Image 1: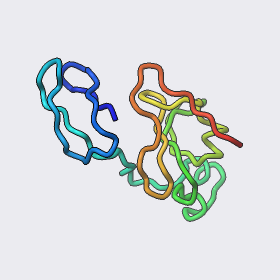
Image 2: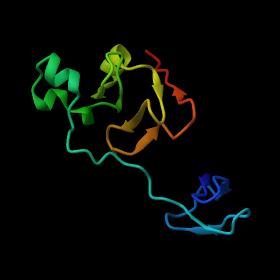
Image 3: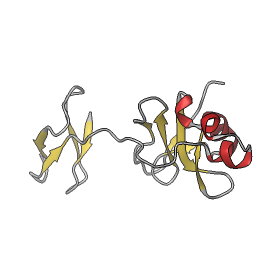
Image 4: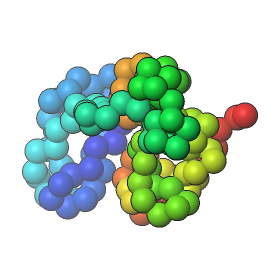
Length: 127
């Protein structure tokens, strides 16, 4: 795995099985680079905005944890929303990354796609 140095922006390579809080010196600036904890959804909201507000489903039916994944992302209408897979395909802009959105695992709540990237990553789902 590659972790970006906060000082110089260079990628520092770690073994894929490196534990959280493992440190290495950056070969360019000699700053310590740390393996960060995995990104996780910590928001208080757990319901799809479209399911709960537009479709008027009850909180249990609109709970994003019942899906394989969910997306916190920008919509074609402009604002951001927490979306189930169906509503992301209908209302999401189709990109993930900084400024576009993040994809989270519905069971573990860990971020599974949407790393910071200059242009974002294109998101496609097999339907």
